Image 1 (cartoon, rainbow, N blue to C red):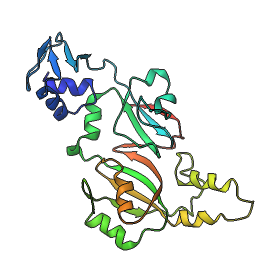
Image 2 (cartoon, one colour):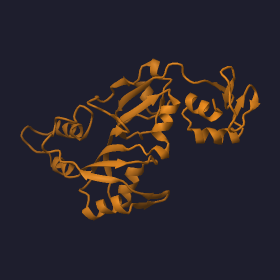
Image 3 (cartoon, rainbow, N blue to C red):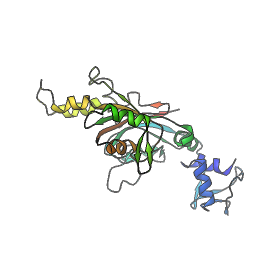
Image 4 (cartoon, helix red, strand yellow):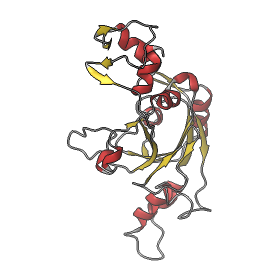
Length: 257
């Protein structure tokens, strides 16, 4: 097996990132610095940053509906992490990509390095779908600008598809189980007298969108809308590649093949 494929199957590094680690001298094979393109045998002892690595014998992948307020990290630096929710037997799994603390929804965790690489490497163009709530309705010109030309950010142009979601017909039904927009509305209604329409509900229903993108830059959706004068008040991922939440409730998880 080629050394970069071995590293990718044993870690969350892509093959390209594995090559970079090899060039940087971070990888050793049987105590000797690894060389790019070398083949290794089953008996080879491979280390990355002086830590022995080996491909998982039994691969495990789970889908997790991450709630807001939790950090996707083992060290939350004072904040609660997703590993405070997940059982101990899943603590060795690594997240595929990230969701920031204030973003909820679908998160994949796995010990299958090849799968992680296929889902995150730019060449595979895996789509990610989000439910987005803005502080005000999106102007049609801005919607077209983002989709057609993109918005210039400090790390380059940001472009993605946006479609309007009409939640009036399904308010409180389909997406409440997965922690979507309806869940937000239900929480906002708890303190509202029976029969009264919360002043915030109409604004929320008028500013709910589905965003589909093929990149994964840090806080890209939030930064894109902020550049045009909007604030994202809720961000919830519903799909990653071929994986969807499929009614998975917040904090729930399940194994996938």
